[in-house]
Length: 272
Image (tube, rainbow, N blue to C red; front, top):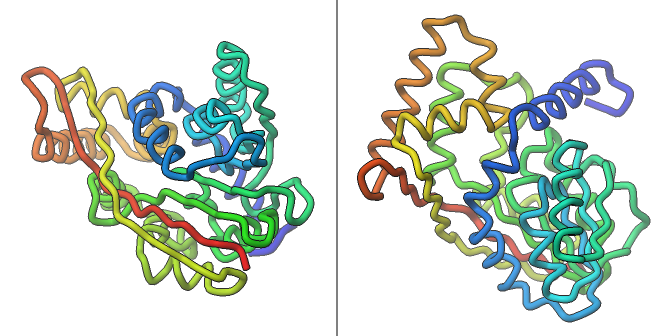
């Protein structure tokens, strides 16, 4: 797929629509603590120029700005950018948020000392191009840091459940491949001098039952809502039942709540 390709443009319009559906900001709030910990491990210096790619509602950009970095966030979903701007303004943080595509970042070469993406750039449909763009905008000796869901973790397993009922678009590499060490290393092999990877847990504590959590995600997580929209009533009921079952199996919270721990691959790549 190349720029100007109608099928690619149709795909990207659909992705933008999916991420703008529901209210991802509500979903993101349940991983905000994990995002703050991800940023804390970067040990950002005050004044460092940081780019948060596929920044969503600002989960990573906000703590990076709190650390004193000069932060820019970029995302395809304009409603999430508005949420991010409101969050930054509420804390008097001067974060710049731009509309843009991870596969064609609207910035000159070597503009940022640190380029981050937490559960964002992994969903772009052309991963090799995404990796090139992350490298392109990063300064030599700068850091690219990604957090990518693994297939084995809870979130990865939930994606697999959904894919059983609603097969993904053909020809698009599964986003979860970014959570595989060998794949991530291969995608960053050219243009880096060092790559370290660590599998880390992240806990999400939902104040709902497994069924309530399933309904919450169905209403607020855009890609999930889009998947349900492709099914008839029987198909929706089957997907809901399988999803609720997974939440119940993985739940380690108190009665009436759903606490699940997922896994992600933290990638730190040093730009050559």
